[in-house]
Length: 114
Image (cartoon, rainbow, N blue to C red):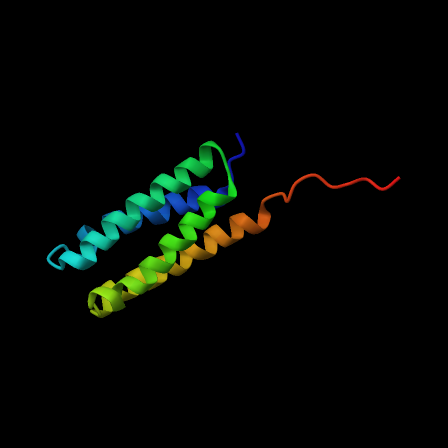
């Protein structure tokens, strides 16, 4: 099993995102809460899959989830500073974490020149 620290960081970010509606007390904002819960669960699931059996597609899914998280305040109209900034910062961190994991992934076997 090839466990990378980026996958563990991604799990923590996903857990924070899932718990943030309660910790930052914005459960009364349904669009913000549901986006945090849904994307948080998705992030946890795909970083957990990456821990079990790393493949590039899991990181790409997490990049897409990060973009959705960054766009959510605009799309659903919850521009309250704390809620929006939580989405933007966590989205950037998830995206950067997934990109970093992709960058460190071996590209395959190299050819030997005779």
